[in-house]
Length: 235
Image (cartoon, rainbow, N blue to C red; front, side, top):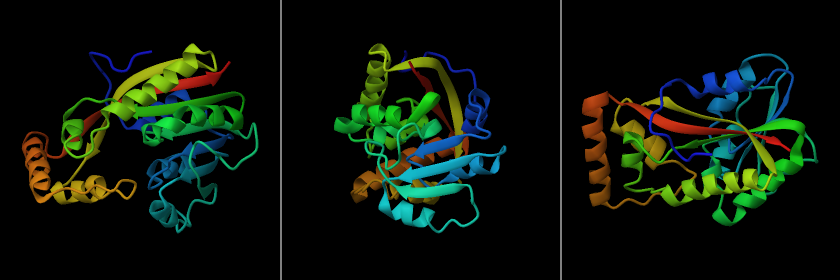
């Protein structure tokens, strides 16, 4: 397994990746850490016969998700990945989109064992994680440096594979595009994310804005974020 690679050749929405490596139709799916349910919505509205339970640990975001009334095949529950309130062997596919590194360090291994508990025999676990690299990351790390937690997330997954709890079915690297119309939108979506309490001093806020504006001059708000996907299967 590799934390990063020297060259990434593919840029695409993540939906192209998970739809190509997973057979989601007529499956029972668990998404852990669904955030604003944007990917949940993509999955629920595509294909056929997909039923989804989407969990979120951020109570503010979860309350917003409960107001969603146009996804009849999705149930939203408040839950962390370390203790999932469902029976054993419940799901065909379990998904974590850029959420595993948000799990507290002391609960990462427990979470992967809990995922094993609720996964059906032969089921798959799809974990995508942002690579600690790139222009977007250079701005984020000014006020929210995730190097330690992303390394820990990778180490935990690797240990589970090395210990033969899971088999690594596939590891993929790609860039996913993210567009910000302006700094105000970045500040709202990233600095103001409710899952983290970012307290920036006026000086740091100005520094972040300056770095964003410099990047914006070059890319017009189009950031390519490097992503690693680990596709796991129970042994």
